Amino acid sequence: MLPELPPLPALTRAEGELIDRYLEVVDLLGRINPARHGDTYRGLRAAQALVTKAAALRDALTLMHQRGESEVHAGTLARALRVLDGERRTARVTVPPGGGS
Image (cartoon, rainbow, N blue to C red):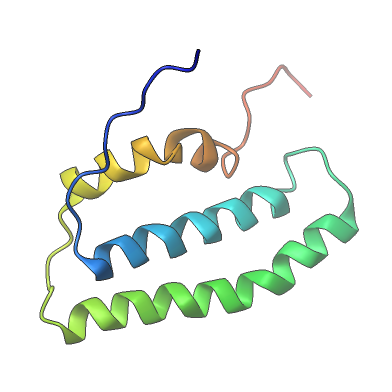
């Protein structure tokens, strides 16, 4: 039986949209990461999709700003990212630890 995940913290609709779009961009960057195993076609497809997802992320932030949500509540959004497996997903963007060259 899988452990029960904690509930998502209360988010505004715009904050939820920001988190969703951010994770989409992170997932694509993880697929493009040249320090990770993969083929060039996979990276190319992810890079092509990144343009659209980055625009959606920009739009989510624009909407927050227009609605007067001028502060990013980092603690709350970090909790939401943890619930949505953000730590594992963002780790794919970094250079993996490794031995020497």
